[in-house]
Amino acid sequence: MKRRVLITAPVVAALAPGHLPAAASPPAAVSPPGAASPPAAVAPPAAPPVFESPSVTAANLPVFAERLKAELDFPLAWPGHGSFGGWKRRARAKVLESLLQPADRTPFDVQVIDEQPGPGYRRQQLLFNVTRHSRVRATMLVPDGPGPFPAALLLHDHGAKYDIGKEKLIEPWYDETRRASAAAWSERYFSGRFPGHELATRGYAVLAVDALGWGDRGGLTYEGQQALASNMFNLGSSLAGLMALEDVRAAAMLAARPEVDRRRVAAVGFSMGGYRAWQVAALSDHIAATVSVCWMTGLREMMVPGNNTLRGQSAFYMVHPGLFRHLDIPDIASIAAPRPMMVINGETDPLFTPAGAGAAHTRMRAVWDSQRAGHRLSTRIWPGLGHVFLAEQQDAAFTWLDHWL
Image (cartoon, rainbow, N blue to C red; front, side, top):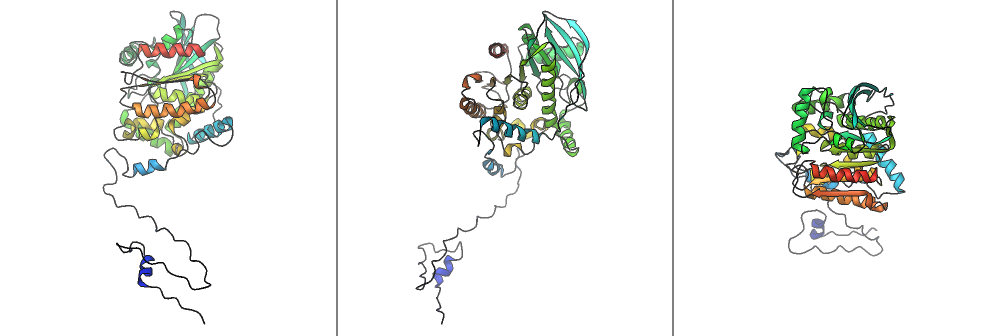
C-alpha cells in the first residue's frame, strides 16, 4: 500500500511564490524513508515589466533605454578567440555586412577636367565613378615635382551646411559663391586655413569628394535627412552604408593615381569627417595612417539625453543597423590597428564629452598595446578647445603625419 504524505499549510504557502510569511520561513518538508531527494528549489519567475506611461522620453529614448544599453556586451570586440588577424577579418566582415552595400568593382575611369597652377602645387578637378550608380566631381591638389607623393583623403564634416562639401577642405578656385561660403567655414572651424592646402604645401597630394547631399551632390535639407535614410532602407540600401562604401572607393582611387605612393595614403577628417576617417581606415587596407578630429566616444556614453545623436536627422549618416550588438564605436576604429592613428577630441566639445572620449581612447589603447604598437596610437583631449580643428591642432596633427608617412 502506498504511503500518503501530508503537506502542511506552511509548505503549501512555500509553493506559492510571493506568499511567504513575513516573520519566519516555513518548516522544511520531510521525505518518507526510501523516497528520492526532492528537486532543488526553483527560483520564482522574474517580475513582469512595469507598465510605464509615457514610454518615450523627451530625448526620444524609450524609457527602457538603460536596460537596452546594459544588454550590449559587444561580443565581437578584441580580445576575441584566435589570432589578431583572424579577429580583424571577422570584425571587418561584420561591419561590411551592416553597410547593406554589395561589393562594387566598377572601373573608376578618372578624367581630369581642369588643371590650374597653384603656389607649389597644381589644382585639379576630376570626374570618376565613385560607385556603379554615381559619377562625381572631386578636387585634388598635387605638389609640383615628379612624385610619387604621400597622399591624404580629406573627409568633410556635416555641419548641416550642404552648399559646400569638398570645398570645406580645399578652397574652390572655380566658383566665387562657394569660395565665400568656404572661407566663412574655414574661419569658424579651421583658423582661416584650408587643411588641404596646408597638407599640399607639406608635399602631400590631397583629394576631397562630396558625400551624397553636399556640394555638387546637393539637394538635401536638414529636415529631409531622415526621409532620405528611410527611403534608402526601403530601397534595400543604407545612407550610412553608402557613405562608407564611397569613402572606401575614394581611398582606392587615390591610391591608384600615378602621382601617389600607394603605400603612404592617409585619411584625415573633422567632425563627421573624423568618423569617416577612422571608419575608412578600418575598412580599407589602402589607408596607412589616420587623423580623426572631434568624433570619438563610447556608444553608452554617447546615448545619453542631450546628445546630438538622439535628434535623428544627421545621425542617419552614421547608423549601421544592428552593428552595435557586436562592436562598440572604438572597437570598429580598432580594426585599423596596428596602423598609425591619431584621435583628437576637444575638452569643451558639446557633442563628445571628455568622459565618452576618454573611455573610447582607453578601449583603443588596449588594442594597440596588445599588438606592441602603442607608440602608433596618439589620443588627446585638447584642453580648452571645443568642436574645432584650429591651427595649433593642425600643426600637431600634420607633424605627426609627417613622422609616419
